[in-house]
Image (cartoon, rainbow, N blue to C red):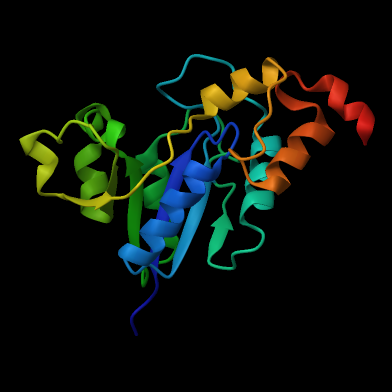
Amino acid sequence: MSGKKIGLFGGTFDPPHLGHMLIAQEALTECQLDEIWFIPVSTPPHKEREVTPGQERFEMLQCATADEQRFQVSDVELSRSGRSYTVDTVKHFTQMYPNDQFYFIIGGDMVESLEEWKDIETIFDLVTFIGVQRSGSKEASHAYQNRIWHLDLVQVDFSSSNIRKRLIDSKPVRYMVPDSVNSYIQKGGLYGTKSSAKAR
């Protein structure tokens, strides 16, 4: 019996924004996936800055995905101590759900750094990569060019770092993040919005 086609979408999601949701929507549709599983990382191996606590990022993702039953949020990396490596997560899911077919969604900027990923060849053996292409992004190196499903889409130019800066500067992000995420941020006083927490 054939299983489901599941897209794994890992990231810091600090915070999750409409660009993330657009990528998930298009991967779901264009690659004919059954579900997308968002996986907030615990300690990203390639990021040095301090990230928002995992539980809060997990809850923001739950808010963002609540109205789409094909979107799920996994805490597999948050429950693992130490740095998060994709190979460990991929092994976890492929062993737990051997009848399902897994895809791993990455941004076009990440394609260029794949050769630096831990055990990248093992990951390629276990999943199909979906590379989301941004306008003006460089092509992948020849080593991986033909091993990635390239997904082109009109992409809003949002970044979590820009959204954090706007929040710190008390600028609105209403049309950059899902309404439910914006409410969570304001009520929780995240990213320097402490004064807004009084409005709860």
